[in-house]
Image 1: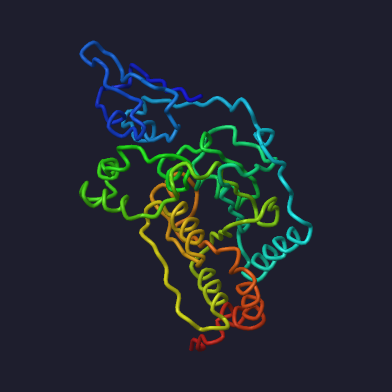
Image 2: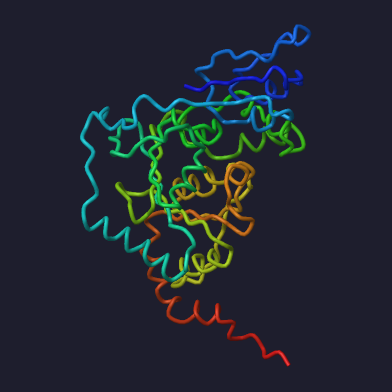
Length: 326
């Protein structure tokens, strides 16, 4: 359950929180009578923190209670079957190769999108609602998180990944304009209309784990690293073909659309520069990029990376072509 509290001494009745609430759970108070905004349909609040984060007076506190159940796999209609030992070894081997050859600063992440009706693994729910990109960043630090729709705090990301419906204010684009992210409502509406999304309520949960701790078959492998690392991953993926890569990027909804959904729906690797949301809620540095790799592409990529690691990567990082400075 989410609770929203207002500091009456700080609130000046600017109504910005009411305007920016994507789920429309806030309404204007009687400011002449010194009222603060009122909370309606509190159960609809997803704890996106937009109201608190954008309040110019710091007058809003959003708090959350831990979920009643930390595990929901007991709701499975069919038993969850753990990964076979050879699959566990394969995924751990992928992770080891990526980390050792590329000298990654954090772990590659296994992303699984769990369809409605599929059994759920015995992984705890987060103690508070999280954005999908926050869970992705937690996984790169070694934490595994299972998130049904009720655990997602970003209504944009949840709707894109098939966990719910897109709220009206996001569908019309008006919030993007209010946040200063797009110039006009028409531009924002076009962005929302043209971005890909899974069918509404077709998925029941997202699972994000470190790749070396995968408990079910990943759909996509995500890597967060500097641009130079992305160069080697792109080269490794085309080591045998030499073909050029084509990527889809808009810097809106980056982790849910660009790192996850494009690889999931197209079967092709895709890079991302990140987006407003994933950078505003995390400590990711300005030098970091993102890439999503469909599982089916991993054997070829890993083989190519092993060959590049024998000479090309070492020579390039040693700056062998740098002329002597005299």
